[in-house]
Image 1 (spheres, rainbow, N blue to C red):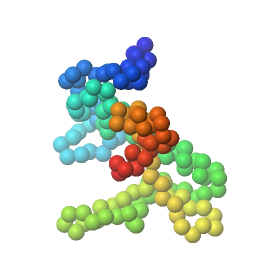
Image 2: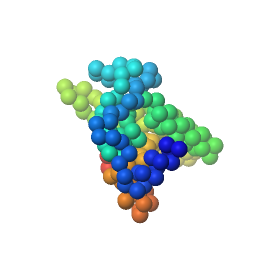
Image 3: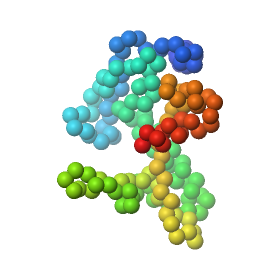
Length: 154
């Protein structure tokens, strides 16, 4: 089937996207509106030969849904272990200065407080694919290489 063919081609280093192919993901209503972008707009970015863009495209509900599921699982597990958990909480200690002297707010995916612990633990969930062409070799040899690349990319 096509999933197996694409997976094997990627692992063998073969190109999976035709030259000039463009991303066809469409912006969903759940995504925040950005300047000049509306619900239903197609991404349209050029795909690289390995179609990495399709794995990482910020357009469409797939990435948001996966991210939110990981956040929910982490929150449920922390609660089950006895923690008090807030999801999508403002993190004033991470605010930065924006142009014009305004503050750029920061929101943590999770704020976790454990009984008898004074400090809140702030958690940010970031999803990375270990099969991106720029991390595949390192991810195959070093555990956590894709996660480290994601952390550097923040």
